[in-house]
Image (cartoon, rainbow, N blue to C red; front, side, top):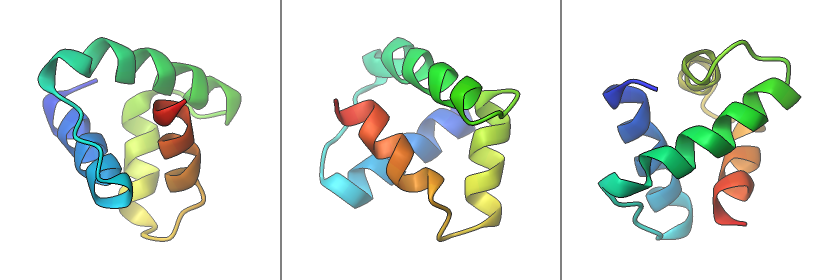
Amino acid sequence: MNAADFDYIRKLVRDRTGVVLSDDKHYLIESRLSILAKNTGVNSIGALVAQLRLKPFNPLYNLIVEALMT
């Protein structure tokens, strides 16, 4: 996961939950989102984030927050 995608995901989680994910959570985020990408038929985390950027009200937002908060 590149730095821009990492920052985008951290901002998404902060905005939706108030939880601040620190820089050292990169591995956790990448691990959980890799599983989510695979389960949703998306090729990569980058492609997952690209879908989020294209559709502001994408149902993936909730799936990502759930994946990272559990």
